[in-house]
Image (cartoon, rainbow, N blue to C red):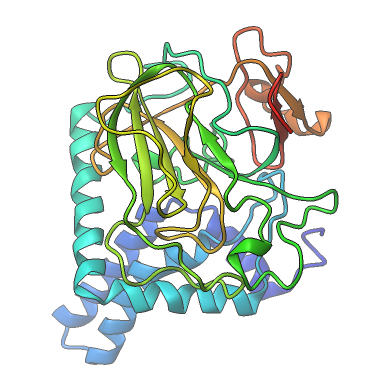
Amino acid sequence: MTEHARSLPRRVLDRLAGVNMWLVVAAGFALGFTVSHFDGPWWLAFLCYLGGGFLPVLLSTVPSDEDGFEYEMTNRKRAVYLLGVLRWAFTPWGIFTQLLQLAGQGVAYVRYRGDLPSTERRAPETELRLPVEGEWTVVNGGVTPDTSHSWGIFSQRYAYDFLRTDDDGTTHAGSGTELADYYAYGEPVVAPAAGTVVDVSDRRRDYPGVGTALVEWRTWDIAGNHVTIEHADGEYSFLAHLQAGSTVVSEGQEVAAGDLVGRCGNSGHSSEPHLHYQLQDTADFWTAAGLAPRFHGVDVERDDRKADERPVYADREGGDGVYLWAGDRVRQRGSTP
């Protein structure tokens, strides 16, 4: 879709989606404080605070022209998603989670004195394979600001979301209203490299409201069921949204690359079954800073034109590993279907 073919509201939404989320937050709260300071209407101050808190959530559902994969939400689903997050955000555990994440961001920022890891700085040593078997599609993620999963959230800056799709790009059979409809649900999740399991969570339910764009509102653990694996010093794989009761590893257990650790689920803040993967510098999800993972031994199906202006994605042969980008269809060489 060209810029001129889009409606004015959509063009404004696209422009806002390209703004740093923390600037949007700061602007909303600054406006709210200003209205309160000058004795403006309480409802106007409230709307400013509300916009600062939740406009970034809404904007996170808007794909940019650079995403490389138009995994678009309808306006109706976008509204439902926002209402679902609002439903969670005003619970005691939702407020606690938001404060925890904000504090964790500060810890990570201070740890690096603002000079956070990049593809060139604090590059990881661990040689990673894909954390899944068979062919999957990367629907969110990249290593540049305009292709990132969540650039403004330091732990998820270099994260990836993996889904299984059919040849038409559809993620489920049937109506998509049952967890079992989704191709990714129950699929094996494996260790991306050898290491030691340092954290396992397996008690969160798989949110049953798939196909609605809603997310789980009853949990403070937005990552849901997860496994954390320590590789090299200061390099940890974090695999999230796993299926309830599916983990087959325990804390302290040694694993090899490709070993089964659990199965793909819909726990935590997940609107449909998928695997969230990130490489991070500490075992703690909340205070971690993300590291840019390179994957080895991977076949990548990607439109060559996508990398013309982004050399970081140009290498698909993977001698030193490859960076993935939303829209890539990927398969670990030698993996099972």
